[in-house]
Length: 257
Image (cartoon, rainbow, N blue to C red; front, side, top):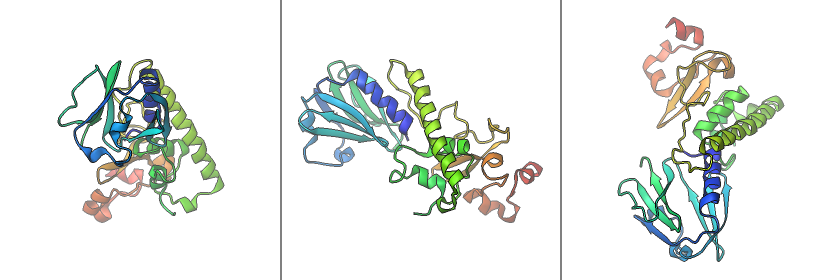
């Protein structure tokens, strides 16, 4: 899912391409991607984009006439900037927004007291952070992804605050540099330069120990046992069912196995 850094770069790319431009036409394959009906989407046709902004992981187009188009890309949504009049792909396309200088396609690449990982990815608590950047933040803060929020002391909270600002700011600047004046066509939840996310088995850049993971449903949490959990391995639900008592509890036991 595109998160705060990726969404920020999208907004900046829109600033260069569609701000002040009239939305000449809207084409969509299914009304299922619409979450409201009043005013109708057609009301935005012919109006100009007055401003662009980000609200958490949502992208907002402020149009003339007090009309706002709000996009949430969810897990699979991506934008593509194409030549004017580009066709909406049958399998991967939701809608097309036509502007004088090009067409913006909306595509799909594929159809309290809680843990820190869940807290960071809950938009009601931290809007803008998802699975990928939460792994990076927690490694930077040296905090376990399964540590409960009510067990955080003042030092933990400060490290989490500092790591969140530092990591997201660094990624915004990195993506800005990669995109330049172009359009972010290859927005993805994984970047090769990430330290933890998607790096299972690779050495942690902070201590050299192999990055571990917890797999659940279609997601996974990547972490460094040495830096974040005091050397303790967190149980992977699926694999721990198979191994039972043979599940290694520490990095040393894992190496012996």
